[in-house]
Image (cartoon, rainbow, N blue to C red; front, side, top):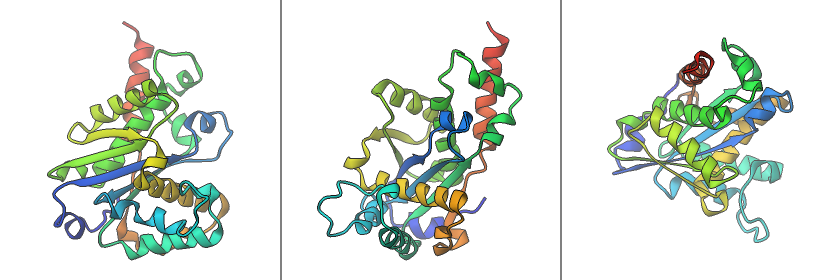
Length: 235
């Protein structure tokens, strides 16, 4: 687990703002429709955390937001160059989820059944929670996390509940990515890592290895395993 220079970033902040987004879909991953699902988190002050998304699409009025899959190669390079320039003031974290990890659980077959658990929303909260914990969010005087909203408010609230149960010391919010440069930066970070994993590109080489926190997913998988076991055991 590699931790970003926490003293450099945190010593100047009264509160730490984290933003998260996902590249891929967990249910598609389970059914073999995508290779990986990558969660990305960017942390810093509210302006710095979203600066690179803004810089990636600078002077382009017809692009409403920075989304990795819509960027040109030049814009992608500009984004990661910006991340590298901000390594002393912004923190980065991510987790890569594979189908094999989901299948490593004893009760993984329940993921394919109509069980009394919206498992993908629960696991989303757990993965974000583990990344934030590894990034040191619980050590902050005041930590806030905002993730990109999912399909409905009800589903967003489920993610928020599971995340808050996992890491209760962090204030959790959600909003649309168009309203948040920080979420757009998290989208592009996750998208770049997913592209590296699937296509063999090397965007992450722009960043120092000690500037990025990689979530191990062990605690998130353990939480999901317990939830599935509870359902399997019944009342």
